[in-house]
Amino acid sequence: MKTAISIPDTIFEAAENFAKRMGLSRSELYAVALQEYLKAHRSDCITEQLDAVYADEDSSLNPFLVELQTHTLPEETW
Image 1 (cartoon, rainbow, N blue to C red):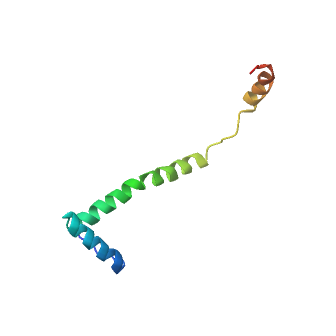
Image 2: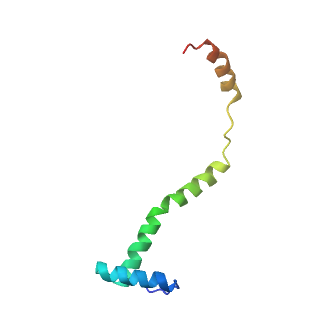
Image 3: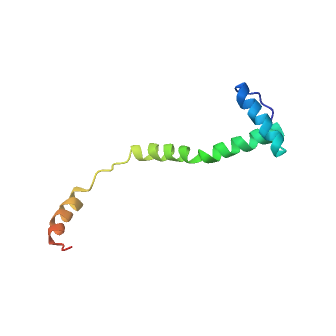
């Protein structure tokens, strides 16, 4: 797919020099760079999705279990 993007001249020039040294075309360099960026930030999306799911979940403790723990803890010896 062809696309047009705007980037600062300094980044463009650095990318051109790097691609030349590595024997890559501009398209190859940008594709690899974008692929690596997406891979590095994939977990960001997963975390956001999990946050959305668990935002609606009740995270309070069951009062019955709290009461049971309260009664059994003093009996424990460490």
